[in-house]
Structure formats: structure tokens, C-alpha cells
Image (cartoon, rainbow, N blue to C red; front, side, top):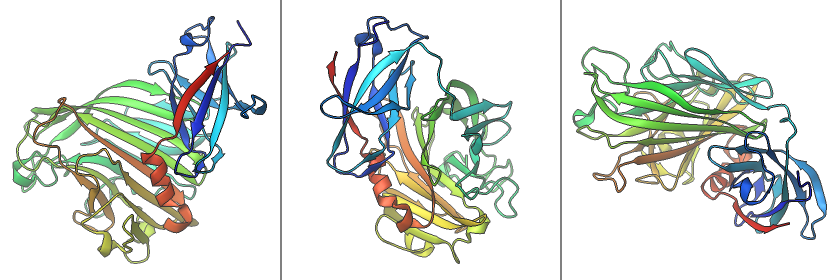
Length: 379
């Protein structure tokens, strides 16, 4: 192994203050390392100054061989500044894994540093959902079996609402009128499950069927989990579907039913990117993000919904269906798609404190403006 070989990478914070922001770099190691052994070698990183002197000899990083993506966290990187890294490689075993995904027959258990962050329930359900979704004080969403609207469970994607215009209803969970028979989102397989010391990720194939069992679309769903720190936790979700072979409104909803302890709308704090505060004020408003906060366990936790600027109809239409303790973002696909794929991207920021303390606007800016990266040298 050529120990002295390395690639030099520069990252740029650009217009956002970064604090342990996630960095993604398309990296093809065989272009940089003569002796790279696929399946055995792995990258290692050091932070260096502009003169090449080592500042931090061991920066945790994670390489996904199927996508050729290298990921790490920025540390503190003020707006307008840059940082440099030296990438080498080693054939030594991986360090202890921080982010783990344990697959059970009907759900995934996703943990960080040995503590559960979320469970992804994918079998035996009408539509897959995340519950619990834990902040540092506990879950910000409620589980199954709620006294009202039991189909409002955790965090999930829904389709069709109550069947507006004749669309399939993959929102309610029953077979009887007036809203049934309802459709389902059916798990097919996990394409990839990734663990590491920077993030965890799964990629899932699903089919969507209407109440008659007819397939109306297929979906590839990607979910990535990472922490800025224990009080700043992130879930990034991408839904990519074929065009819905359906009539009516064909609406997609990204939905959460809040933990009752957060006491929204009476006592919990609700705020959106447009400066509107209060559950009634944010209802049926377009916004880049919306944050909902309240008492969880022995502290305050919040959950901010981020609507990606590349989503159709951005900024999203935020609102409730049936109860104010629920929040959804609504999007419709265009009548015709350029490449026969409809893509929606959402971020979920689970945080301590209420909106100003959690610096939600800055974190949204980090979400839609990824750190700029470039490989500037090999040696």
C-alpha cells in the first residue's frame, strides 16, 4: 500500500454558518489510490490547513461503495470560509459503528450510539411509518392506537387524502365507506441498508395499490439519519415514484401526528418560515418550513418539516386534516413528467427547545444549500 498517496479536498461554507453539517462528496477512490482494494480498503481523513499541516488527524468519515459517496461532518465552519482535508486509505478494520439499523420481520430499529432514534414500521400496516421519532427527551410523534383518528400514526407519506376527485385513498386505514375501500403502500424489499459512523440509510422499493388492489405506482424511498449532536437530529427522506395511474387530485402528503404531550395547539409552539406563529396562523399557508414544539418527557423538543426547493409547487402547502395535532405538507405532481419520475424530498429536524433556540432557519438553509466540495489535488 502506498501510504503517502492522498487526495486533497476543499469545502466551502458559502452563505451559511455550518456546525457539524453533513458533507457529501462523489469520490472514486481508484482514480486516486493505485493499490485500492475494493471491499477491503476504506478512506481515512485528516483536516489540514492551507499549507498542508494537520489540524485534526482523525476526522470520522463514511464511504458508500455502491454510490461512491464519501460523507463526513464539517465541525464549525463559519459562512464564507473554507476547510481542507487530506484523504488517504487504509486496509484496517472499520472503527465501532455509531449508526446501526437492525432489521426485524416487520420493522427496522435505527439507533445512534446504542440509543433508539426511530423504528420504521413497514409490514402489516396500510402505509409505512416512523414511530417513535425520538428527540433527546422522547418521541415527538404518537404511536398506533390513538383514541381519535387511529390512522394518524407517527411520521409517514400518504396519498390521495380522502379521495378528492376520485383519487385512491391511501390516507385512511379501512375498507368501509365513506372513505374506503382504501389503498395501501406495500413493502417489496430493501435495496440497501447502510450503517456507519456518520449516518445510517435505507433504500426501499414499494408499490402503491388502490382499494381494488390495482397497482397505481411504484416507489423508491430513501431515508438517511444523522446527528449534528444529541440535541440536533436529522432525517432526510426522498420519495421517487412513477406517475400515479389515477384520477382526481393525486395529492401527496408528508404527515406527522404529534405526541399529545406537546399540547398543540393550546400550549405548544408552532412557527413557520414566513414568521407566522400559532397553529391557526400557519394552517393552509405556503412556507419553506414549519416547526412544532412542546413538552416531551422532562424537557422541550420540536420537529421542523423542511420542504425542499426542488419539490413541485414549492414552497409547500402546510396544514392539518381533521385535527390540529397533525401537520402535513401537500404537493401534487404535474400533469406530465419530463422523465416519468416524480420526486419529493423532505427534511425532518428533531431538536431541543423551541424554534428560535433551535435555529431552524439556519438549519433549513443548510438543508437546501449543501456544502460545496471539490477535489483540488492528488499527491
